[in-house]
Length: 179
Length: 179
Image 1 (cartoon, rainbow over the protein chains, first blue to last red):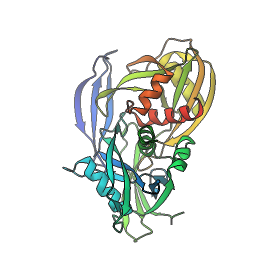
Image 2 (cartoon, rainbow over the protein chains, first blue to last red):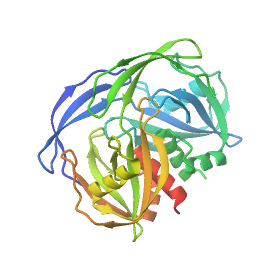
Image 3 (cartoon, chains in turn red, yellow):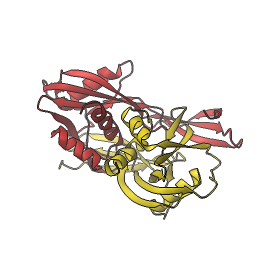
Image 4 (tube, rainbow over the protein chains, first blue to last red):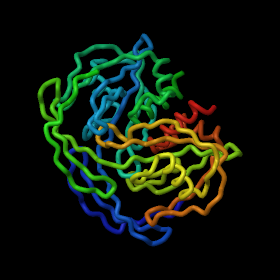
């Protein structure tokens, strides 16, 4: 256990739509220097490794504005205020893909980016999911669903195919638990 | 391949120390709605799975302001302007841990967060590294080095022990390549 950094003061920063911000002035216990750090205050999110009875995993293909390119990633999204992250996972899966039901279990939580974001991503898996609804997308979404064989997903994971870190994280935990 | 979103306009946002920001107004090809998106313009970073001759992997323990907690993560840091990401990996390893030398190979690049950040993390591995320097930390750092046996790292990875997504990503690629 290292000596704790002390927060000298905290100043609100601009609101950036996806997150509010603050600047923390932190005292380094090693040398007494004060560091001004930007912190993004974001909502937690859930994502889901969802398996059909045919051993296919659901992915969503979408255009991502940060990298100005398409990604193939696991379904998921923001946990709404007051919502449990399991419920958010089930809601996002249904909204983005139209699939629901099945048997759910929790894989674990990993920080979104511990350096400057205060939120966590909660990773879930579900087996025996079935197509039950029409997808219902937000105005800001344009998503298409792809089903990929579980063994092909494993190969893609270890080949570095997936470009979204939270998708990689969920898949690692999934393949550790469910071989 | 999905239809591309069109950028209607782009407006500079505040500078937040770790990154500059912009707001992109993007036209959704599915429904013609315009979405205002925040983009963080950040520098790329490198991290390193560095193995000693005794089959131990180097980690750094440090306090992370985003989650207000300690993490155990791989050494790494920002790629300086004009610097190659391999050189950044070697420099950061030496600065944070004092280790250098050995045989280096590239594991792949994964987006920092494709949703709202434009940068990538470049993952490297090195074998046969040796302690050759004193670590030299920035004013804003307070880091201690820990060596963990490779098989213990593998167990921790699959047990969900590591809380930094980019550390998880690098380790997945490492264990896929180097068993």
